Length: 210
Length: 210
Image (tube, rainbow over all chains, first blue to last red; front, side, top):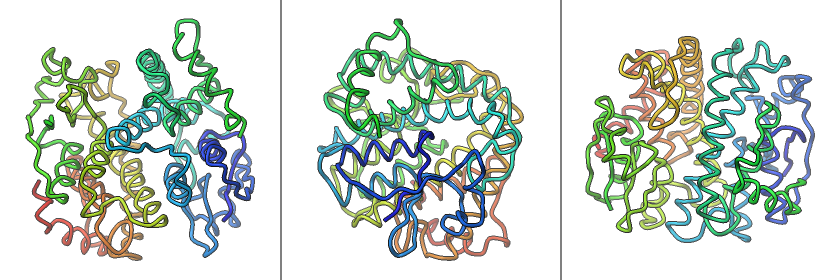
């Protein structure tokens, strides 16, 4: 197995943190997305979608959605458990993983991809159609990111971790989202004491450096 | 348990088809979203996010992301299997479920919510901030929906079902997406023979009427 990676990008980091929590090591290959390497013929021969992270299996096939890669690793290495054990915990982990992704990470990405100069004519990742940036989408993304941060602050007033009383994949997505938000100048503050407490805890885990 | 539902809306349909495939019956309560019932105080007392579908448990807590609801049902009723059995199948189901959702369903929703008159000042679902529609997002959504349909056509030239050789939750999301696309006048055609073959097969299952 080989993981096509980009050290600075948020989605590959989700997979690297997941692997670190599982104690699993996979050979990684850095792909220079701002330089366009993900759209070069060498990389497209590996993954025609041109997206990162991509897990290349030994038979040449690839898995290329971050959470799909995590579920593959999880099925091979079930412990420590990160997706929940009993029905209600499984549901809470999925619910909060999705909220942190759909309301958090993706809105921050909407701000970034619709404003960052290197993506001026490729507002969508990989080989998706070339599309111009939409300034109003970036603005909407900012409003929704702040709304998400407030929702997460409220949630972390109810429980120690995002999905409940222990660390799960939902915390990984939330941590990556909060760090990614800094790229678009949105930061948690003293108005978010629960988020600050949680952020200190999850950032102190060795996996956060992955 | 009680499922807050809206018969015409795509996300609740995903859950209803999933339940039908599992052979599980849950009491449903119709919520009139176009009429604003999901934002009324009665419904917000059940789910403060104001979204549908919502599964209300007997202890008063709720689960409210479609796939989180499906995973809860799956954990209670593992058979028939719809999320994959061995590691690679689990990964493929997750990968394709996500692609059908992120590239399909969500782009179609972007067209719909940014053009439909009833959502003029609430382009986001539930109690998310009131936001004006963005015409350029609708147009982008159209381009990306067509791109997704082409990708799904190619995929269904490789395998009988979306995630492989049997019916899974990825087919449910894909079916709901293809039917939802009609709302914004995007239809599969004779240019999509594999999609047409697959669509006839999955639409003929009794669950498709759920």
